[in-house]
Length: 376
Image (cartoon, rainbow, N blue to C red; front, side, top):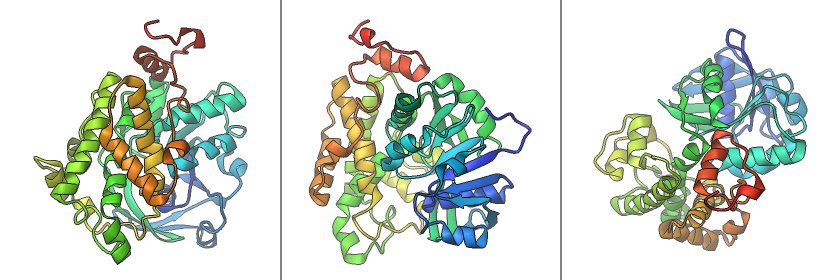
C-alpha cells in the first residue's frame, strides 16, 4: 500500500459525469492522474486539451496525464484505482482488471451500490487467486456532479462525509490514511455490509424516476428532480423502501441511518420528515431530472441496488414488499428481467451462509464451504 509522504498516483476508471469530475479534481489538486474509459468517444476532448475544466464548488483546470482505453496502461504503477462507473460495469471491470492489478494497489468502487466489493473481490479471486491489495467501496459518490461536455465538469457539492469500507474491514484505517491525502471526506464505515446497505441511491433513484415517468417523458426531464419530483406522496413511497432497507441491515446486526438522517449528515439538511429534509437540501437546487426513463437510475440502481437488497432479504427471512414492487414496475417499464440481470447473494459469495458467517466474511475470516450450515 502506498505510504504517506509520497505523491499518490491515481487512475480514474470511467469518464462519465462522476469520473470526469474526479479526474479533473485530482489533477487540479496536483496528483498524477490517468483516466480510463472503454470507448474513445469520452476521452478525445480530455486528451486534446490535456485535462478537465471544472466549475462550481471546484474551479479550474485539472491536467490528466493519460487518457486511454488500455486497462494495462491505465492502472500500471498507480497507487489507487478509483472506479467511477455504473455498478452494472463492475463485473466486466473486475474480469478486465484481474490480470493487471499489482501488489499493494487500492481499488475503490465509487460507489459499490449493494454488494459491490463482495462481488468484485470474488471475481478477482476466481480469476487470479488471492489479491495482495485492497478492494474498497464508498457508500455513495463523493460529489454531486455533472459533466457539461466531454472535457468539462461541474461539481455542485463535495459531500461532508462519505463512509468507506474495505474487504476485509481491518484495512479500513490504513486505506483511509492513504485516501485522506486527496479525499478527506471519506470516513470509516463499519464494513462493506454497512456501506452496501446504506446505499441511499437505492432509496431515492428508482422509485422517484418511476413515479415521475410521465413528467420525465412529457418534459424531457425539464424540472428539478429532487425538489419538484419528490412530493409528500412520493416521499411516503421512498420511506417504505428505506424502512425495508433498514430492516435487512438490522437482520445483519447493522445499525443503519435512515435516508432523512443521511441527508442531515451529508448535506446539513434538517427536517422532521424525509420530505422536509429533501426540501432543505441546497445541493439539490438546479439538479434536473433525467431526460429519459432509459436512465441508470433504473437500469443500474434496480439490478445492482434493489435486487441484491431483496435477495439478502430472502436469505435473512425479511419481507421487502415495497422494494419488490419497485423492481416489478421497473421490469414492466423497461421490458427487462432485472431480477435475472441483477446481483444476488450467490454473486456476492453469501449463498448458504449464516448471519455470523456473513459478518465474519466482511471482517476477513475465510469461511469454509463445509461450515456453511446455520449455527456452525
